[in-house]
Length: 398
Image (cartoon, rainbow, N blue to C red; front, side, top):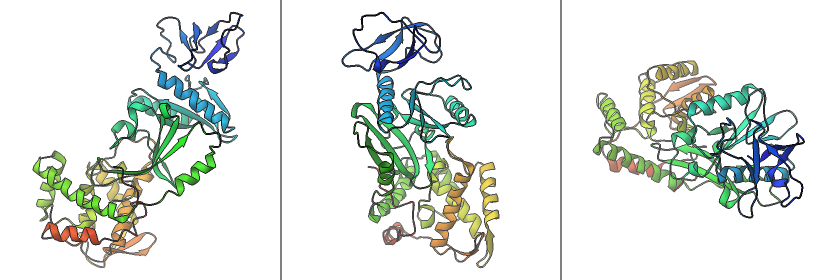
């Protein structure tokens, strides 16, 4: 712990305690009131710890050096930005202590949790809901064991949030580099291992770091070249073929479904491959749910009208039938999930399969193209114009 109570009942920050002071001062755990002592050396972050293994429910001896140092690093950075910040502040209405409590404005306190150890989804959701229900905003920052590498884990997805300007994002702290990393505009291609994102790295030791500058950097990072996106589509086709050859269950189930409807992995329309905004939320194989929705739409005759209400009703039916299954992502609202379907409808409109006739209605224009060979399909992949894909033109993480 970084904060303790001294024998004068004053809260003391371990970073501010002077070494080699002559008077003897006793320190107590703010939670269990047991006696603790100060550890302050030349290498490790100064902190307080219990004298023996403790049953303290809040400050256990399992706290790692990374966790202690990370909290101190974030605290010092917030203070340098003139952001009011408290370390390990006790919230009596919640009976818990966030790692930090800050105020970005005068109205709303913000809890900062630096997560370095494993946490059950249930406990994470309980803590998050507790903050929100009691008027706090909350940001979770992931430690080294959970930094983004090549794909998103189920655990990382718990912490993804959504912002109207930078899309899906999550935060991670690199204590060894004194760097806060923001992974943003996170999106998914053919399957869960194909993740695209931007990354911005904020050096916490720089005195001139400014939150407004950070926002500008996030909003003005350049878009990647279209060729990278086209290559992703070709890889998606290869992924389907490999899944069939290696009998991957979800791809075998998809293959059986489309065979019964006269399709094959070769004949599939381009539209089921194209990424849509926030399909990252959906656990169901992307080709599968897009094919089912496209099938439902194309059961209509050319010139027939489909309303947004019908589409959203179909969305809920697909959920009830387990045709559309979402990842456990507590920060993502149902409305945001529904926008995945709206984005797919917009894609079909851009592709000319539908036309917009009002703010809430589409008209069926034509059937999607089927393919007789893979060479023909790949040629169409390479000829695609991605100018319409506002959320697709993002940097593919290697």
